[in-house]
Length: 349
Image (cartoon, rainbow, N blue to C red):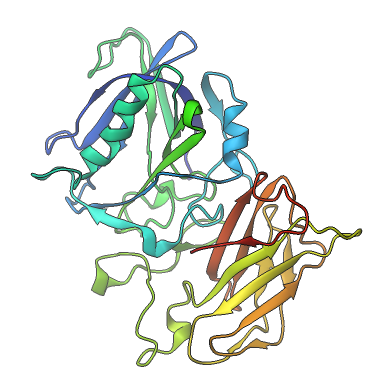
């Protein structure tokens, strides 16, 4: 079954412990509304393989506006679209090829997960205005039991700070669920900066069922479970690896006309025409609009957005799904990006 107590913790980081081979979790002590909590962050999988990571040093996403308004402490995050809950795939937090494997600890500067996480934890501890947000599964309070790392009583905290879906059959497939992915976010108000750290195990598939979050496109065994990435289109039919085949490169979400005329611009990156029959576009509420026609090789196509899909001026996400129900590409935009009427928002990835 999915995680039982999926939540987000907001607080101030006040201490830390680096991960080791015998204890492969980076630990953070957090003070939140007069209570102490421990964040336990996996930086190595149980099979000893490297964890995939992405650090977004300038994180922009509609969820940050919701997080800023939260008070200190734990907050339940119901597994629904357009709420507090995160979903690597359905919230359009990243593209799969951005996730890279990294070891827990190696010699040299800024080249392992301990150092990637520690850089922002140390910065947040030194900044009295900074906040840390941890998404995952909570434990405790553990009555009459002190925390084994920092000694506070009662022990409590949050773990599973990683992707929590796409697990193959076995020990962890019972944890699969949509809108319950873990993550570590930092807010630095003085710099108006958000930072996000995302982690994923190599055994987890990138594409998962919308209902069960079980794998629908298994990880590629030739690439040790890494997400599907763009391939040599001269030798492999483009539909074999759909990720990024057609990309959302721009959107008009705040039109000057009334009623508004919203558009989404697609780019076909392949060297063959793509038939869009059966493909769909989804908004942040997961409303679906069918597509038709085709898009020529290397060409762009402007799609008129029609109900029930709507692109909110308050920030949103746009997702492109192929005829097999597999996500091909997705983007997000914030309220600030949609603020100026008549301007088309460009997307880079």
